[in-house]
Image 1 (tube, chains in turn purple, yellow):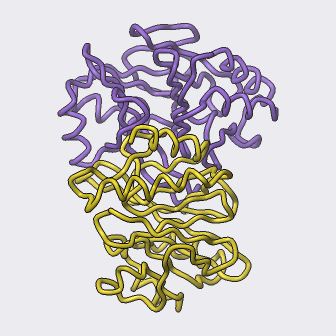
Image 2 (cartoon, each protein chain N blue to C red):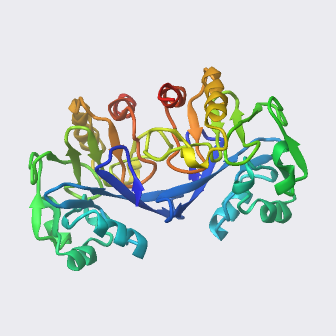
Length: 197
Length: 197
């Protein structure tokens, strides 16, 4: 896995030739047990690396299209699989999350509206690191964008939902599930996207 | 390939499990013929993508350890292969570059000292985009660092050599050959590294 912006964060990626961008997954290392977000299949090397960093206790899925290898990794490690409450019908998780939940200390949950699935989640860690699934992404390195209009179920709701995140005043990094992550000036980059709505 | 910070730039990457970071290559698209930098082997998909963007006219190699697939890609495309003048003994290029050269309009060459090879090059494109090989790299996303001391032939010379780059006042992006590229605030991030010398 690759070192991210802070020592507690690691990531792994797979290039997607249909979209010409990388898909990303994140590991958050905590003394009480580590957390994976939208986990792609791990190579043998990355799985060994992940295991060397301590037990995997939780797996968080942002939306039904980002389950990726979540179920397999949960079965393999015994981690608890969490998903969006509004997507219970399309996911097979053990626990569910909605707006305002704080399943672990320092982990704040946002439920976003208007995306291509009903209750996509974004995860804010210690106020500084935002982990996003599909709705907030990057199609140009160093910038953020929303899913293309054609994929949104309600563009105005999606924009309103995302605009709230500008209140995350300590935001440093936006770790996108799809496309280049933003490791510096996260709040500024987010606000630049919102300003173009 | 993946879109980088400006429409003229594309990149492709390979994860290196020994170092737990990605190796990167860059394509600069120009009406007069495109340029590749330190090209890693291309997948069939990325090669077709590269070819769809116009003819590859030049391949630039930053140092002898970053030849990667340069010779094969040059043979495949007819591109001219350029390398560091001080490393003539260990590379088989068609043309050589040294400090202050400008082989194409908008492409400025720096020869760096003190690295693990004698004449490593860095390439500055239109004043905004710095492409680096081994000496300037990233071991933590959003930050830059030098090669570890043990690999430097002359640390003081390497530091002095790199410190000059703080004069690139329009610098936006530092596209590292090894480790996460910096797509925003390139000059600030470079200066932060230099301040810690």
